[in-house]
Every structure is written in structure tokens, then in C-alpha cells.
Amino acid sequence: MSFECQFCKKSFKKEKTLSVHLCEQKRRWINRDEKYVRLGFLAYNRFYEITQGATKPKTYEHFAKSNYYTGFTRFGKHTLEINAIDPEKFVDFVITNSVALDKWCSDSVYETYIRELNKKETAERAVERGILLMQQWSRENDRPYNVFFREISRPRLIHWIKSGRISPWIIFNCDSGDASIAAMTDHEQNMIMEYLEPTFWQRKFSTRQEDVDFVQMVLKEAGL
Image: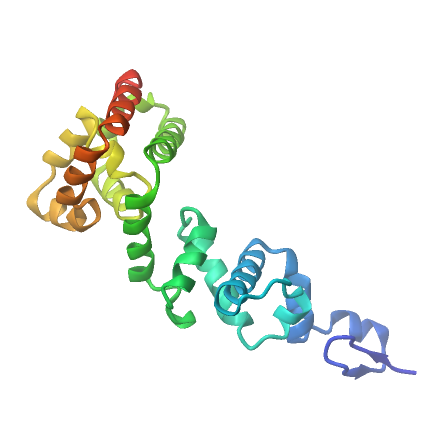
């Protein structure tokens, strides 16, 4: 009597040996509910939907046996590690821009995505994301969130600007945000200017006065 692995078809003399056996396909099945795997599976299906017009989703079994499994799950891990904003939009961005799968985890790709996202998202969405981040900072530091720009460390502020956590909609439309940028050294400003793109945002604000008024009102009421 032998015991066969349903994934790799390898046979074992003892059931106990089979139970501790871990081939690659069995490992992929065990990990199917891990968040990074689910993100990779989502990206895998979106790839077929966008590039090949697939209307029927691929099964997880199909994904697990794919030669692209490792690439897509690596992207899933990367998305979680960098706490990517709107992961599904990030997936669509790399696919519609024909980025090669082995480049999806590149810092430069995410930075480009963030700059495009900041330009396209609504003022309401930008303010909502920013306020939620400040409230999180407030809880972590036991400080009111309206002192965020006055008390946050510059390295952390620079990181959050570069990673898209804080939108130019907020930075350029509240006194404390504007002052925090003005107080930076030339070197610090040079690190973030390509992400803030002041000229672009000045043009955008000049054509979206209603949105600017809304953002300034919200930030003023928040004490920022």
C-alpha cells in the first residue's frame, strides 16, 4: 500500500511521510489564502482581462501551475511591503503601461505610478487619505493631528511625500504644509520637487478653483 501526493503524484510508503511532504504545488495550495498570494492572483486575472480580453476568470489551480506564479506573487508581496496606495489601480497601471512583469517591483515604477495617481485622483479623495494618515500619526505619537506638519520629522515627511501618502492637494493648500516645505534645506527640497511638481499644480489649481476652495476650507477647519 502506498500514499500518493495529489499535487506532484509522488508516492510514499507511510501516510505520515505524505502528511509532512511539501512539494512546490502543495505549498502553493497551502498559501492560497495568504494576502500576498491573493493580490498576485488578482493581478494575474487582471493581466488576462486587460491584455487578452478574457471574460472568464482563471481558476486558482490554473494560477498555481502557471510559470508566472512566482512573478505575480512577488509583486503581491512588494505591494504589501510598500503599503501601495490603491493596489488594484497599481495593477492596472503596470499592465496598461506595458511594464514587463520582472520590473513591476521596481521603485521607479511605483514612483511613476504615484505621480500619475496624485495628478488624477479627486481633491476629496486626496484630502480624505491625508487626514486619515495624520490621524494615524496622531495616535502613534499621542499628539493632535493638526500639528502634523509642525512636528513630524523631516525624513518621515519626505518619505511620505515620495511614497504618495500626502498629496500636493494638501501640502500646497494649508499654511502649515506650505511652511514645512519652505523650512526644508535646498537638498531636502530637491529630493521631493519631482514628486510635488509645483508648476503642474499651480496650473491645475488655477482651473479647479472650486476644488481648491473645498480643500482649503476642510484644512482650515482641521486647524492645519
